Image (tube, rainbow, N blue to C red):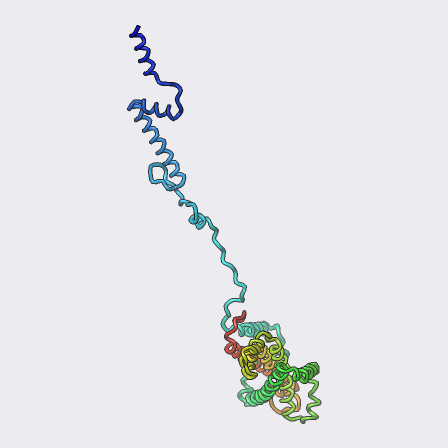
Length: 349
């Protein structure tokens, strides 16, 4: 009786209990497993982990182990991926006119003379009405050799120079007096606008009666033609100066002279040079008409005499010389403007 009870107790203690948790069960299995089973489980887990690592490295392109190497460049996450995937920015087109062409002002006249020469060589132009360029050059050589052309050129330059100097002085003085003073504006601006509305060449008969038919009235007419554009542009530039600069000069306590020198003159120079260019061109335009009235020399007189004899080649010589004088004088004014106003950054510069 005693032996049977002891056997029952031993069996009960050797049988594992079924009322245990999952964690306890796994722990029991691991502790109760044999060494062979443990080694097999460890090798399976290592193989699975290695396969997963190899697959991940292959997909991301960073693996160095066995398997197929990536054929394309790796795409990394973060800032590097944005740098690699960012589209190439196209170059923006500039809106400025671009770099200035060398001798750009001579391209147009050169093209004109080339077309003129081609049309003359092809027989498309009547030699009696429009002589060929080589005919005009030959006539220019004969006139220069005879001494007629140098005398006429010097006489025209003298008349244009005197008239331009007088008109320039009058235009600047009147514009300053009218632009810097309300009293001066009331007295001068209306008179100049009235003079501008009257055709200048229509004043020729009146000026002949006043000043005679000599050189004086010619210079006076040229001066009127020159001073009007200079006055208009300079007066407009003076009126367009920002009033904040005037207030700044008052706060700084500048004198009248310093105000004109440091603020008025720099601010009005762009408009002044525009008027100067128009005045230079106007002096040559008026000269060609005035030299045909009771003149004994000058380019206009030479052209008038050629008209009486039907010499179109001589007329073209005079016109070409007028055009060259106008182009050279305008280019000189533009060069001075570029030097004086070098501080400005414009489309032209």
